[in-house]
Image 1 (cartoon, one colour):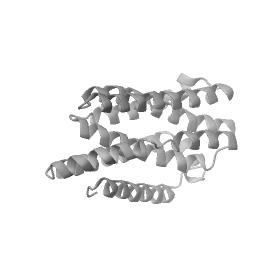
Image 2 (tube, helix red, strand yellow):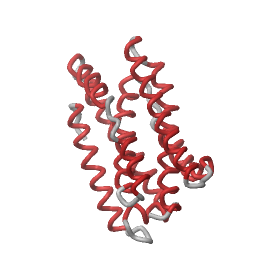
Image 3 (cartoon, rainbow, N blue to C red):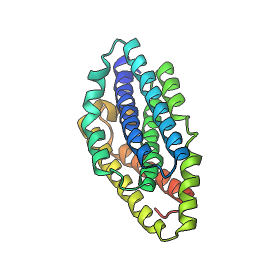
Image 4 (cartoon, rainbow, N blue to C red):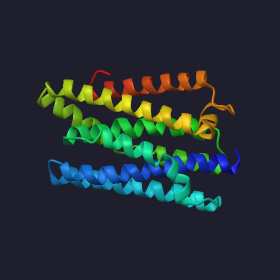
Length: 214
């Protein structure tokens, strides 16, 4: 991939990780106890570390970090505004569903990037130590109060719907990114649709792991 392509990918990764840091820092305040607050605050710190790694790589390639992130700011900010959690468990689903869906997209794109950028992106995405934390907390909540599962399932569906809507808008607005995703210079619509289907399949598997219906 040419440096411009790597910069396009790194720009969306950097802003995505920065936005995730902001959201997790807010979510930590809803934790039911100090141990969970510490855990989610640690998650936020990890996300900021991911942002710094992507930002450093942008600088290495001669790009301007803020300029490369700017095209993606509105989509991420609108997604987080539309899916602002009202409870601790809604916040946990945001971590597990929203961030995982974004990671799926980054993986698709990074497979066509230069070796150094691909390795960096995969190292960021492979840090899934907190998946087990979220699954444990959500499944325990459902066991204690089965009625919560219906509300969380609806929240999960809303999150994936909003995420896919924002992703489609970004791809329409950023044809270079769509081209990286599909491997075609014009961002093949048929290939984008196939990728979206894979994202939905992955989402369904994650919801099942939580004990929720997709």
